[in-house]
Length: 373
Image (tube, rainbow, N blue to C red; front, side, top):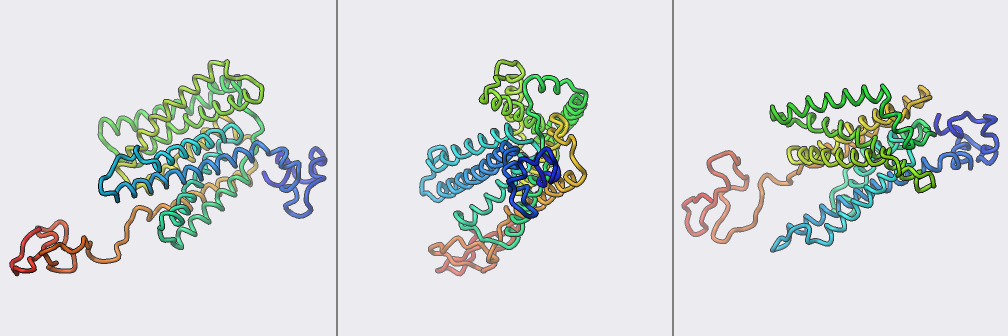
């Protein structure tokens, strides 16, 4: 198992004896050994950057939401871009996305991508603490299940020791595995785009499947760009290769079109539904991209693979619990009270059906004759 020994080796392996000599005695000794930390420094740094980046993104989203709420309450509303609070959210969003981008340079794709669930958990916690939303038992359950799933997928993720450089990325781009994957993805995207544009079928599954297909290319290019920048900073210059700039262009183009279709989905459907399906599709596409292009499942044991995917499943369930009732407003009364209107009194306390001919009927306090508002 990934967490039982250094570099995935069992306890007592002669190759890791020098490291395991400093381990703490007990079942978790190897996990607390200096050797384990020494061999997994980059992995731990990538996980830390991903979690921190997603938490910062959740703070940024709630700052923007709070900014919009404050602007709506003003007597003379002003555009959001004139709010310092809104700009603070935008800056934090950039910082969080930068942290996510950097994480791909230190850890495998299949570890970083599923940790996007931490943004959903962080958003739920911040909404309760600062936006004064009511805490619910299902929110606690969803957060617990999501965190448990994140722990399992991190603990049992395959240990990938190879670092993609420019030459290896060039070779992998023309490999038959990636070419088949890319051709299938392009055909599927074109078919979905035909139904979206020509037939005007804007179902949420079609929109978010196109986002996921674009995201798989984004993940491959982001990982490549981040890894080459990391190697260049460490002294192994990679920025002189043409493949770096090709991957950079691919990353920007796919990100732009990905955000376009995601924005369309957010306009047509509830945010909670979009967040859940997009997280699931994005995670699946990222795992496929990492497994096919970067061979991140190579030499993975059956137990590790099962526990990793079980952790992903728990993360999906947890995010579903956290988002399923996010956009549903629960009314505490049977009618909407807009306050007392001078000279008028309510005809009945239960608001009529909005589809009826009479909606919100009022009576003059001085005149018993009914008037329509």
